[in-house]
Structures are given as structure tokens and as C-alpha cells.
Image (cartoon, rainbow, N blue to C red; front, side, top):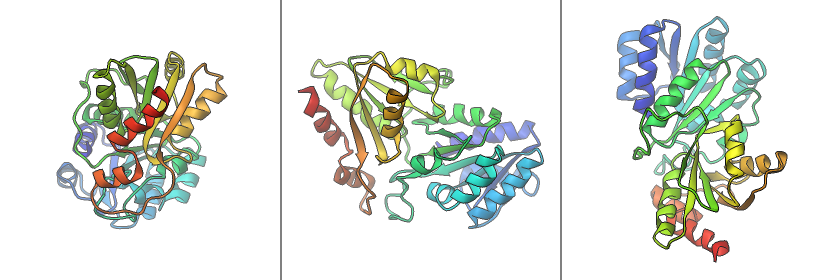
Length: 303
């Protein structure tokens, strides 16, 4: 997902000399091309100094550059929150924040590298758009969408290699994708969309049809998304994120604020911060967000 995203940005940078990438001591094959071809002109590294990266990016963007910044997700969000809020949000300076490894992506690195609260804190920043792709085609399409945006943006790229769910040609302008229909739909984002689809397969085997909605544009929500969820009787939200202010909160607020005729039956996510090691699957199981746990929680009201 990371390399797909940066390969698309690299292609844009070759034709747009105003496009600049700044990273905070990050390494990746897709970044090596920037270092070799654009170093000192369209590529800079601040080292392990994420706040300085945001400050530098804001100044360049203020002077007309199209700036992308890149770091591990917890460091580009919570560590830089005040800089992003003041420089990008309140002043509406359009820099693009790219974070890799939300949720428990860095499962072996512990709580310093886990990120289960970024949606909560970032959606409170004014004017900031938030994206969360679930596969490579979505990451590539969203790279281009961020490039053309006039607002500051933040995208959370999962570290795990995830299977593609659809082709690159599919239109992603609606901010979401839909898989199947039924009286119930699971609304999810990022890597957890794949867990939702596993639950969908389980219920299909029992003759129960449910839908899965992949919400990759978390802010702002499109009008089509609000209209679409009204077609269901019941919804379940699923996220690898704390429930306070996360995806489930977004869905609940949307239903209440728009008086939509649909019920959010359950929010499945983290009830609190989890400090854990031992592999992502094991961590998810201990949190109750693995596939079996999700099915058990949905069974509670389906039955």
C-alpha cells in the first residue's frame, strides 16, 4: 500500500516540479526514487524531527508548493498535533500528511508505535480531510485525490500487505465502496474491511445476506454515503481504533444529525487503550475484534 501510494506520487512529481516530499527519516524502495531523482529539489528529510517537518512543509505550501509529508502514523499525528492544528487546520494550509502503520500495524513495537486514537484527534482539526484505504487500488486513487485537493489532508496507510478488493478503474469519488446488500451492513475502514468481508462470507454460508461498506473517506462524508446507509435497517461499525470519537462515533453522529431511518446496533472496536505485544492477530483477539469475536457480537442481535 505504501509503495503503491508513493509510486503514484512519484509519477505526479515527475511532471509537477512544485510537488515536494518531506519525510522524517523514513526508508522504503519507493522513496529511493525520490532521493535519487529529486534530492535537494523536490525531496527533503528532516530526520527524526516530525514537528520540524510539519513546520517546513507549512512554509513551503504557503509559498505555493504541493507538499507531502511522511512518517510513522503515531508520530505524524499525535506528536505533531498542535503544529497541524494551527498551521494546516486553522490557517487552511494544504499540506498532505501520510502516516504508515495505524492501529496495531507495528504489532511488535509496542504502544509507542501503536495508533488507536488518530481518527478521534485528527477529525477535530478544522478543514482537514481524512482518508483510510483498504487496498492498493484505493491507496493509488486517494494519492491522486489528495494531490488535487485544496485542503490539508491526512491518509492512514496500513503496514500489512492486504489483498485487492477491486480494480483501479472503479470510481472512488463517492468516498466509499459497497459489497453486497441485506437488511444489515457492516461499516468498516482500512484493514478491518477484510475482517468484515470474512464475517459476510460466514453469514452467506448460513443463508444470511449482509452488506459491507468500505468507508475510505472519513472526513468529510459524502452526501451519497449518508443516502446509502439509509437503505439498511441496521448497521454495525467495525474498527481497529478506540470507540471514543472513532468510526462508530462518525456513523452515530451522522445518523442523529441527519435523522436517518437506520439503527446503529453495535459499535465494535477498542473500549480503551490497549498496551499489548505478541502479533496483530493475537492482539485483535484479546481486544475482541478478530473475525470470530466480530461474528459472536453480531450473533447477539441477529439471533
